[in-house]
Length: 79
Image 1 (cartoon, rainbow, N blue to C red):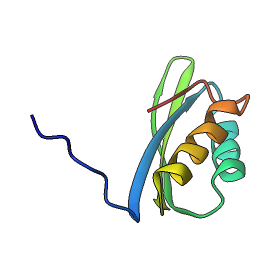
Image 2 (cartoon, rainbow, N blue to C red):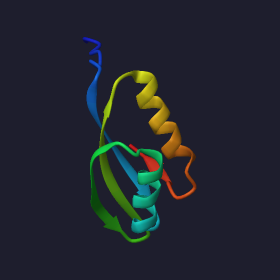
Image 3 (cartoon, rainbow, N blue to C red):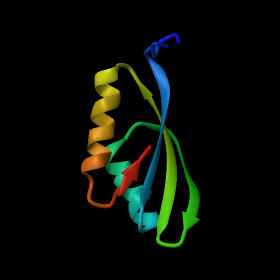
Image 4 (cartoon, rainbow, N blue to C red):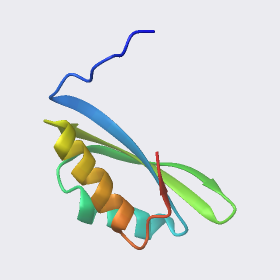
């Protein structure tokens, strides 16, 4: 099995889940100000998801964006 390396810079997509669709959007805007795009993806009972694309220049930058999202109180889960 080949280990594939991520080539930076690259476009990265996060799928962000939370309970309130408007608050998730606000959280993403706060955590990732330089987005390429953001779209409401799905709603299911008490959870909503948004997909956000961003250009990242390094693994450290990608991990920092993930951490910002993870630490935001409106974000429940990230893929």
